[in-house]
Length: 614
Ligand SMILES: *Cc1c(COP(=O)(O)O)cnc(C)c1O
Image (cartoon, helix red, strand yellow):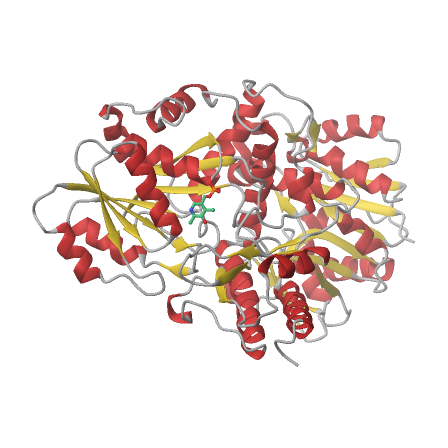
């Protein structure tokens, strides 16, 4: 087994400027520890007992570290200012006598990387990840056997881009010798040779395996953007992954939220007790607020107001806080549209209910005619994006355009679409959007939030308050000034939400929607095969929740079917329409199409059991 590690630590780190003045890059501190020391601890834990560091710039700082860790041997590259990483590595040739793991000094990474390399059957292995788009990355080109062909920072220099270099590589002693021989032929003309170029240089004669990891977490820290990303996202993710916790029983929730969550999200709630008025918790909420905004808009122009409560709280906060004397037009094509009318009625708002079919698209001409009828001044229009009663997806972009034309502010209940269906608030002309922590964002229940256009929100401050707790502008203003919520927030739910946001960004919203859609396609095929139909046709379907028409059978009983599924770890949901006999299946949360295949199998068993099919 490999027992040696080599760390290249001679670089200048000039792009980090003031952040680390008199320290080398490896001494950036995250969570009270220099990143180089984190890396050293991981190496030692993985069984490495000899760490050779190639130093240069500020070598004394590394030498002090070597006092603390007797495993470290520092070797100074006197010419570090005029040479590159290969010269630093070459300079270690008298100290290297075995296979080794080569690392860059400015990396943070999930320690699983070391385990993979140390146990890999190939002698020479480059660790690679999926593309991060973090800027300054090195792209890898490989052949069909996954051996290195080329690498470059410039995409155009490669025929294919297969992966991204992580900066952790296993190099066998014979290969190291070849690298040195190759370097000697180049140094005369080019002292600025890096180890990456050297690997490419010898790759025609040596098979260097590129091991691409899916879902691997790491980052290099070259500039301030990298550093911010490292602190806010990558490091927390690594920490969560490295802490081994027993798996929690997995239930498949096919109700429309709370949805199935990852264990990482569940465990994110287990944190030391903290008073939510501490600055540290303010940072958590600040992150949550900004990143939620970023999923649908530019935080310069829009803001997210957090509230303790379920999704309805956010909707009620908007409706009660932003409408003055003029009318709000509310589109009702399902139970959630109707709920907005109920809220408007309770607050005594001037509202117009616009009824539209529950299973078909909105007639925009007829809607415009209502707007133009001239009797009443309409200041706002409210619409549900994905109507959870049926799965009907309303065309909010067209409605947004209509609102633009008539100078109406658009309010969208996006509780069951946010973080799954891509939304662009600016393009869609949305002034206020409501969502919650427990649906497609895949967090825990308890946080409700409003994403608002800052300018519109400012102008709503003059509306006479109709309530206290849910008053949107007060909550906004207070958070802006203090980074606290006015009243006790659901502390642990917010920690889970932070983790859920990180995972959402990692997956990507478009990609999440593709995962959901694939599960939905399996559901559609499955129920069709079993002779069942659903309410809304696929052209107007959200592909997130489906109202399935109940089977016509004397023996059918929703509660019995529910209990049957429940006993098998799957939760389904009753219908919500008086006039239609449906039950509902949501394909959201941390599930895949495989879970839906399992659901379809169980449904088949149930339908056979009641004699509906043979
Ligand atoms: C879930 C949901 C809500 C909010 O419901 P809560 O029970 O308050 O969380 C609002 N609108 C839609 C469309 C929903 O799907």
